[in-house]
Length: 81
Image 1 (tube, rainbow, N blue to C red):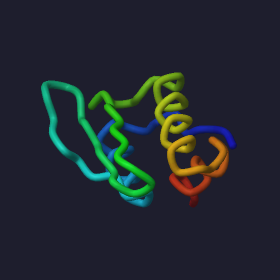
Image 2 (image 1 turned 45 degrees about the vertical axis):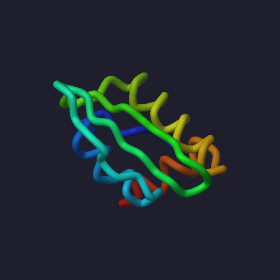
Image 3 (image 1 turned 90 degrees about the horizontal axis):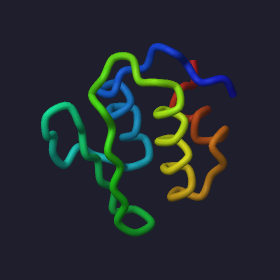
């Protein structure tokens, strides 16, 4: 799946709630999210608008590995129309 090019850090943080992530803290321009499902896992997202495509891809790959999905499956869940 082709990743959208206009996703902000705050928008991605909201979308990751689908996988059980919630905002733990924000320090400066970085948002820290944590999930306790499938064990504890942390993700740090820059609060930029828009996120660089490589950064977005890396975050989705990290989340997908934790939840046991492929990167494309996770992206489909996050960005379904």
